[in-house]
Amino acid sequence: MKVISNASILISLSTIGRLPLLQDRFPNGITAPRAVWREVVLEGGMRPGALEVAKASWIQIQDIASSPMMPLLLAELDEGEAESIALAVEIKADVIFLDERDARRAARSMGLKVLGTVGILIWARRTGRLPELRKELDALQENGRFRLSSSLVERALREVGEAI
View 1: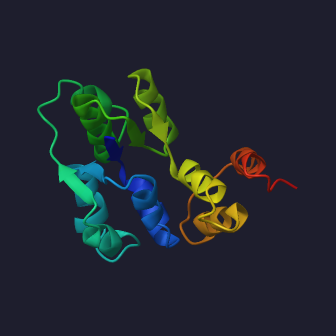
View 2: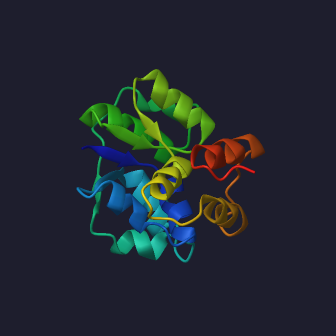
C-alpha cells in the first residue's frame, strides 16, 4: 500500500506519544515528501515529533518530480501539503494523510483517499490499540494545540461508542 504523509499527523501523533500507531496501521511504511521532512525534522528542531520522525526507519523520504500542479497547489496550500498531494498523485498513492480542511478538499478533488489524525485514532480505538478515544482527543487539543471542532469530537466519540 502506498501511503503519503503530510507533517501535521506526524507532529500530532508524536506529541501525544502515538506515532507508532501509523506503523501499526501501515506496517510496510509510509512516505513523506522532502518538504515535510524539512518541516518536521530539520526546521522542527526541538518541537514535538522531530526526533521521533527522524528515528522512524519506516518513514521514507521521496522527492517529487517536476510537477506542473505545484504552482496551483502552492497558491492555496503550504509547501508540505502541496508536495504531499503532488507526490500522492505522482505515485498513485492509496492514502494521503492530511488534517487541514483546504488540503483535504484539494486532495479529494484529485481523487485521493484522505485520512487524518482523528481517523487513525478512531481506527486504533476500534482495534483495541487505545483504551479510550476521549483521552487521546483531549491530549491532542491540550498538549498538541490541535484544533478540533466539537462536532468532530462528538462524531468521533459516537463512532467508537464513547458518546455521552
